Image (cartoon, rainbow, N blue to C red):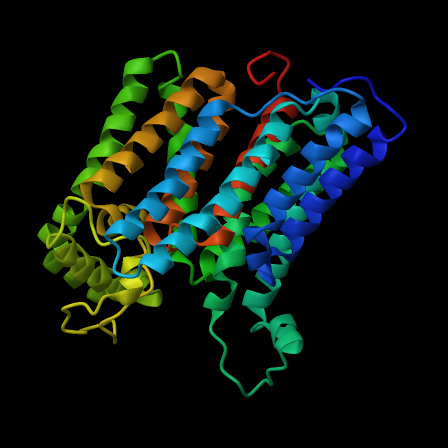
Length: 414
């Protein structure tokens, strides 16, 4: 818990919430800021804590450091067998610079006083609503602000996928923002924020090219309802959920190869999948899965796909190289083999068990869907080690913890 206030405490809280809110707002135009800004904010404010409050902050959980070091260390160790050893070492180092400082952001959120979380409860939802309104405006009117900033004329054809990363930020932070809105005492403000959220999410989900974000929202909604029937007290049900996710990770390349022909036919005839990159994504997953089978024990090292020429007919994806597999399970498999897949399954099980043990049923209804949405983004859209994505995950964890604390009177998150 936070300690005695000083003359600096007011600006400490205001500046912290203000910087996070500003970061959320600019995410559509500058998503790469997420690669370092959340971690930097967490590290700086955690370091300033002792000066401001004349007391030491609570230390972050050791398990968080262990996982961050395992993830970073695995990439560095994979240099021993990686196709590009220097690339693997560089990736491991960058992972450490994102994950380790990011832990302090979450640690700061965990000890944020509940009355402070309530005092600033409108800031994050307002920022998410502004972000959503901007994305909606751009989608509706052919990206006028983006064109003006980047210098593109009206005659230049721009694709809406330029907003996909900002859309991912919006979708992942929408659920904890809704929880924060429920704690607001200003009824007029609450109604305005709810209306803006409803309108923007409707426009974005209808017009976006980001099917990853659409799937993340669908998954979050499904698990929001599921937790009503599977409260944390039913530990065996939660263990079964961990088991299902683990099986999916461990079987990912085999499942892809088994259903590829069928799913490709579906993608080719589906209006929804053809709007995005469904066929291309399936083809990438197939040729990556077949490559995995050449070294399934320990893979080809961190960032291996950047250096591999794949065996592919290029039916839909017009290249035999790819930066990453667009699926976190396949990325773990091709980089670290079954060892990496097992580590990924263990991490997911750890996260699910942490949620089950740390939060009440009401809180878990919001926390678990955020985790599922993050998992969905990593499973369908982006490279797992992209700095902005990992920074977004850290930011989402911190915002979700603050939302839980703002709406809770118990000691579950103290």
